[in-house]
Each structure stands twice: as structure tokens, then as C-alpha cells.
Image 1 (tube, rainbow, N blue to C red):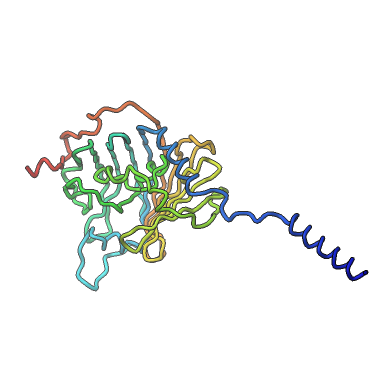
Image 2: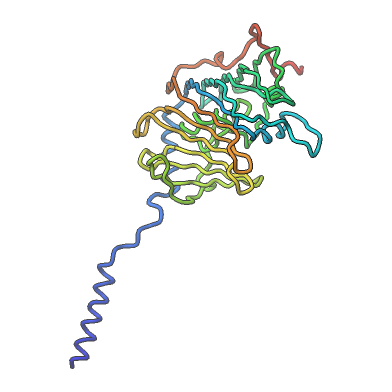
Length: 315
């Protein structure tokens, strides 16, 4: 009898334990659909944008190889370009005017450009614009530096391009960091939900973020977008991995934690073989949402001391 009572009590305790044990918490409290919906709403609220920023660009000592070997200058096989012994820091200024519905962009950058086969740089102002049909470029007539911007673009997108100019695009809720004007048709779209997956949670700058991973069909690289669930999933960090190693990152800082806060600053870092090679540290002076724009704002004309390059010159 006592055995039967003991067995009954044990059964009750087991059942009670099953009923009252805490529920298993899901690994991620939000879904991809939650993220994409919030970012769609953010993009919908920003039809046009003016962003003006300034800061500095630093080239790290002993880490120039990737800059000089990726098409900027040619060296005989088996040789290495000259490498500086000290960090070199230069002023950097950036401005953009974006018209998202009409896929138009104007970008002005004052930055150092590498002079081929040397450890020297030349400060250069370059203005690039895409009016929805034609891409045009203004640059100094006496520019001696070697740069991919010197070539005459044929308005064909380079689908995996990026640079520090991508920060405003990320801040507007676009998960495709490609803001160069010749990429603007391709870049002003966001990765669809079926190309994203939640990879993990990470803390960055005191913010608990969700890390989204976007796999790319071509190449051995992928992108990560770190979003802040407490601020409508805005992007606070973007990272690109190539061959399993971190290749570039952009960290974004906003003026406050509200969902519509302006972008206050951003830092872009480039890596080569695990080492930092270039760092852009930039503060935003002007972040104006939905300023009035005209098509003429995106059409470049000849200016003194500047050379105009455009596809019309091929005709």
C-alpha cells in the first residue's frame, strides 16, 4: 500500500515538474520577416537624402600591399611594392545627394589617391553623378595618381563594389552596400528575405544586435549585417568576409536610440590577411531627409580645373 502511495506521489511530482518548468526560450526573439518589414518602412520614409561628412583616412604602416596590387599599379611578378614605415593620415571629405525612387545619385569625395610605384599620395577632389541614364565623372586635369575612378565608366554595375560611401545607404535601411553612382541601379535595392539568415547575437558598443548573414552566389565571400532590434532593426555594422577572413567593415553610430535618428558618424576599416590596412573615421555634419531635388542636380558640366568624363565622349 505504502509502495503504491509512494509511486503515486512520484508520478504527481513528475507531472508537476513538467507543467511548471520554464518554457524553452527561442534562440532568436525576432524573425527575418520582422527585420525586412522594419527596414522596408525605414526605406519608405526616406525618398531623398543629403549627407555631408568629413574626417580622416589613415593608411597603416606596412600594410599597403593590397592597395597597390589590386589594379592600382603594376609590379613585376614576385616583387612587392614599397611599404611606408609610419601611418599616413589625410583629410577626407564626403558628400552625397540621393534620389531613391528615380535611382539617381551624386557623390563628391575629397580623398588621397595613391601615386603609382611610390609611397606617396595626392589629394584629389572627384565628383561622380548618375542622372538615371548616364554616369559622369569630374576630376582634376592634372591628376597623376592611379585610381579605378580614372576610367570611363560605361554605366554597367559592378555588383559587389563597396566603399565608405555605402554608410548612408546602410543607414537608410538598404542591405546592399553599393553606392558608387555607376552601381546605383543595382545598389538601391535591398537583399530579399530569402537571401538572409540569422547567424547569431552579438554585442557592439553596448547594443545587443542580431547578425544577419547574406550569402553571395558568386565568389568566396559573404556579408553580415548587424541590426539593432531595440531601434527598428537599423544597421549598426556591416562586415564582409572573403576567403573566410574579414575583408572590410563599416561601423555606424546614430545620434540617439530612436528609430528615425540621424547618422552621426561612421568608421570604415579595410583588412588584408587579418591586418588593418585603411581606416576612415568620419563625422556627419549634415543629414537631411527628403530635401527637394531636380534632375539637374545629378548632371555634371565642365568646370575650370576639372576634367569631365562621360560616355558621350565615346560617340
